[in-house]
Length: 228
Image 1: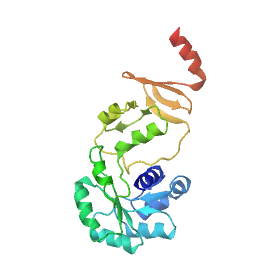
Image 2 (image 1 turned 135 degrees about the horizontal axis):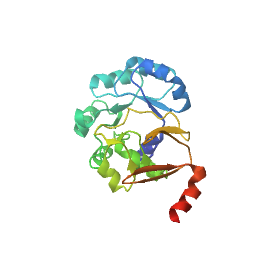
Image 3 (image 1 turned 45 degrees about the vertical axis):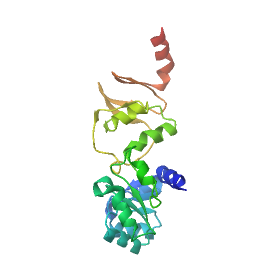
Image 4 (image 1 turned 120 degrees about the horizontal axis):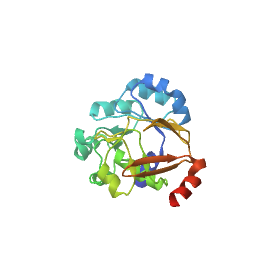
């Protein structure tokens, strides 16, 4: 059951929001992509709005008072963030005592080394962490990633043999700081000679020296010349 919950939460289109103003501004995006809302903290107005609109919502709660407020709104599943900084599995075990009907989704500080101790507890519905993204990409059939920005967990990516190219490394996790707005569309990235347009189906070659984009229509010709 837990693995099914974990898979279901992992595959949801989740929209991270902070306030009701965010939800209203993001309404078109939510209708198109999101199947639920996750918040870093507890915002009663936003939670009630989501409940009225029948939008699944998982607010961040780290205190008994916040959990009680969530229960008053009809909720029983809460995000626990940042988990490790707020006491980790020990704190969650204590909170579970007075709230046996509640489940938690800890995020923040999750690693391959500690996630097992969380998932072993019956009151943990799922766990979240940016380190999981490459694993999900591999399962989805991705061969690698090119990021016009930063990444983290470099050793983990290397051990997974998941080629990742980025501009710099950053210790801050990306969970809750980005939203998928579309896919399989042309995008623009910064290149050596300015902005480069990348189309779906273009050939991307990367090594330790950098990344080269070959337009789909030119792929065969370029490969033939490279092998000549």
